[in-house]
Length: 255
Image (cartoon, rainbow, N blue to C red):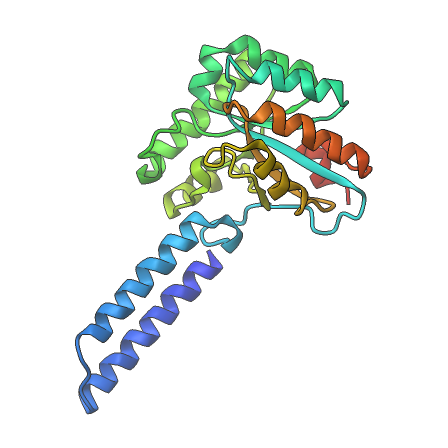
């Protein structure tokens, strides 16, 4: 919230400055329009960029880690077509990951969630519906989304999670208020694969591998057809460079 408050204070200060200038020397109205446009632009960037820590303090990496460990994270599952195949590849390379699951998918594919847990991976909360308008939720609706998914995870796997990743990576003041109540750790990333918009696995792989460093958190999706080839080659790269893929909880507690 600190950066958000700074932006608000700066905007008010600039508005007052414009008002003073307007009183003494007169200025064109478009200056006010420009200030308003810049304010909306900064608000949008702050909401869509978790690294700005606009409303929350997400964890995007373990910055103090020196050991060659990274966290692979998968969003939007469980997926009936790809998640089990992802699990098999991870098992083949003795790698661990964290799956940020959608509550509705958990309810639909409970056996896949159980398989994720049985293989020793972490589970995170990724909302219940993940619908396109979710970022306009009220605080009460966010609480319902988060608690419903937590309940589904616990009911099916017997596990509880303290990890949450915002759908689309978007944060809002109402989501921040809800998470203050639920006390989840907000997990972001510092290596985004863009696997949902880039179809070529080699381009995705190159984008990831040139950014890999100790303590990194990598964002992937276990709903994409390209994830299998990307994951296979990424794990080969990590193995060749002596990196270990671990869960978020291990990454955060290994300092």
